[in-house]
Image (tube, rainbow, N blue to C red; front, top):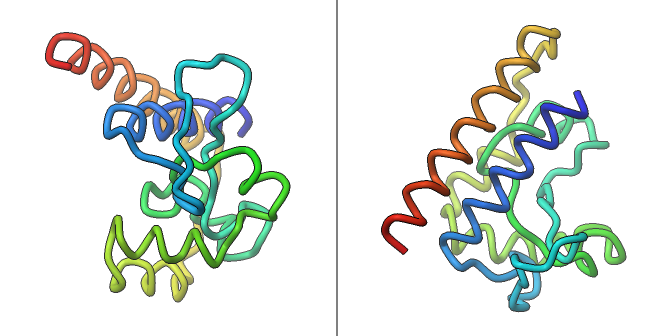
Length: 132
């Protein structure tokens, strides 16, 4: 689970870095270059919540967020929701909020998640380096 989550989160941060996105909650500029954790992959619906548990690998639910909003303001959900509506639209946000599909996190599923998002991140970054 940890390896799959790490690969997924790295992809989200790379995706948002290429798009030059700011913090989804407070719009603070994010220093993607700094190694050591200035940027988190923040979940709109927390991984610890029942709904968020099943959306932890859903790209609509996860966006780059500053450490202050994600870790010290419990995700800054009000600002996150506003930013999320701007990025993906109100209809998709409502879908996330009303989602009740269950996911079975088998070992094979988690291995696939890790493999897919590791490859997607590498491919995306390689394309970006060729055409910045």
